[in-house]
Length: 255
Image 1 (cartoon, rainbow, N blue to C red):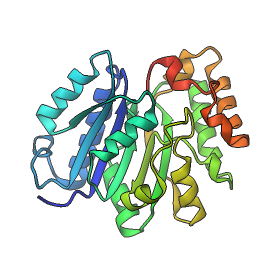
Image 2 (image 1 turned 90 degrees about the horizontal axis):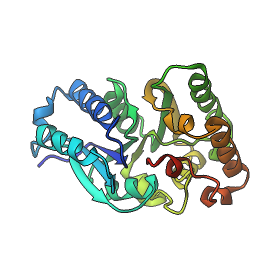
Image 3 (image 1 turned 90 degrees about the vertical axis):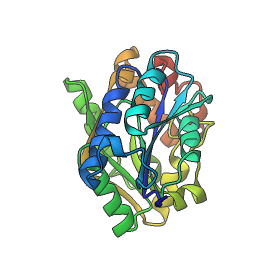
Image 4 (image 1 turned 30 degrees about the horizontal axis):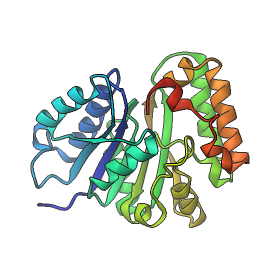
C-alpha cells in the first residue's frame, strides 16, 4: 500500500443539502491532479483519501456519504462531539496522510486545489495554509462578509488569521501543536495557526479560492453583525472563544 500524500477531512452535521457538491469538488480536484478517476480512489495504492466525520447527523447526510463510499472510496466515520473541532479531530485520527486538508461540508474547493496544496507543503515546506474564501450565494452582504475575512487575514496578529473552512496543515505540525481545541465554539484552530505564524511558516494563499456558504449568518437574526462581534470578542478577549455568546454553528444546527 502506497503512502498517503494528502488526506481530506470533512466535518459534517446535518449537511444533506450541500455535502454532495463539496465531495464532488474534492474528488474532481484529486482526479485533476493525479489522473485518478473517482472509481479508483478506493484502491489500496491510491495516495489520497477522503474522510467524512459525521457528528450524529439526523438527516440524509450518512446516506449521501454512503453513496460516495461505494462509488469513490470516501470513508464515513460516525462520531459524537457536538462541535466542528471534535469532528475534525476524530476525522484526523482516522487518516494517515502526510498532509491534512480540512474542508467544511458546505465548501467547494477549486479544481486546482490538490495541486496547489501539494506544491505548498511538499515543495515549499509550508506547515499551515489558509486559503481564500468567497460566497457560494449571491448578494452584497455575503460578498462584503468574505471580502472582510480576506482583509482580516492580513492583520499582523495571529489571532486574526481564522476560519478553517478550507485549511491545509502538515501532519507533523498538527501532531505537535494540535489538535483543534474542542472547548471552543469559535476560533478552535488558533493553537495551530498561532504556532505556524510564530515560526514564520504560515501562509494565506489567495491563488486558489473556495466557495463557502453564508447560510449560518443568513439564518441568524442580524447574523453578520453578531458573528463579527463574536469574532472580535474572541480576538480581544481569548476567553470568549468558549463563551455561550459564540454559538454560530449550534444556533443553525450545523457544523
